[in-house]
Image (cartoon, rainbow, N blue to C red):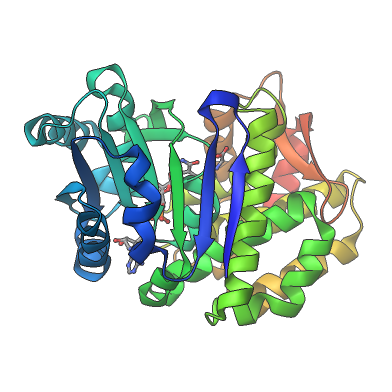
Length: 364
Ligand code: NAD
Ligand code: GLY
């Protein structure tokens, strides 16, 4: 079973293909985009597991596919690796009319997409995401970036891919903790905009996470459709796209205090962050407590952390977390911008949240 989702951005629009075994069809699906040397950028973990299958499929269609293998991990999203990658792409002979293929998680997608966006003033790229997080979120929508000491994702550009191939079978090799972290982003879509999808996840989420092909394809396609619709309406995040940051203000602060390390994966921080955002919404009189309980039950049932105390490190103080949030969001006159909810499936952006309300939630 394969699903097709369109990102409707006019002449920059593209299709997301979702299904099991799509790596084997990459040559057929990408042939119309491939001109001259096609660079396949990946990381060492993914290269070991999935590069050969992709190269075989591309070369089987006569595509001149040339791999570039980078170290895995967030540290690769740096200026140093961006420079190395750009120069290697030039060395491979990628033409202005050529193609860069990103095979990997969000790190490879963000870095390779950025490199493609600046190489020769912009070369086409396509995404073959291999983590659940990348399949439901980072490979769609054209945000590309690297990190700098001043913060994550601060240097980058919008550069939409020409195509996204989501092969659900590659998730079978993903470590369980990474799979669950991606699942937090899946739950995020339901929590921000689709209560029926939340009910579907309550019924079928475990099946999808266990690798059931139909459930997995349905789940990923649903998230991609939601993101595609939001991106089509608000590509540059001047409004609605900010809803995709539900749980991220708290989450970023938690990631920052734990040093963006393996102590807390991004998706785990988002899971805790969403619960805190629901609690804040409740405190401010917007959301019923029952919805937060339902969210907690589902995340916890899946095996995700739901409270600050679940982090395996010393508990950060509310003041430290608040400091990170103010820095992150540039609080104005004691007010922070937040994604809040009126209940499950009904998120909105508020620019009017007092620091005291946030402090109270963090102190609980
Ligand atoms: P990642 O790319 O670091 O991948 C996680 C780990 O899984 C890595 O060790 C990787 O080598 C390994 N891996 C990947 N696929 C595998 C597979 N199929 N089998 C076995 N191992 C595999 O992390 P991620 O969670 O995919 O992405 C995180 C990044 O995404 C962050 O840098 C974040 O800023 C970015 N992000 C970007 C957007 C966006 O819109 N551009 C959205 C969300 C997150
Ligand atoms: N992951 C947030 C966005 O793409 O806007």
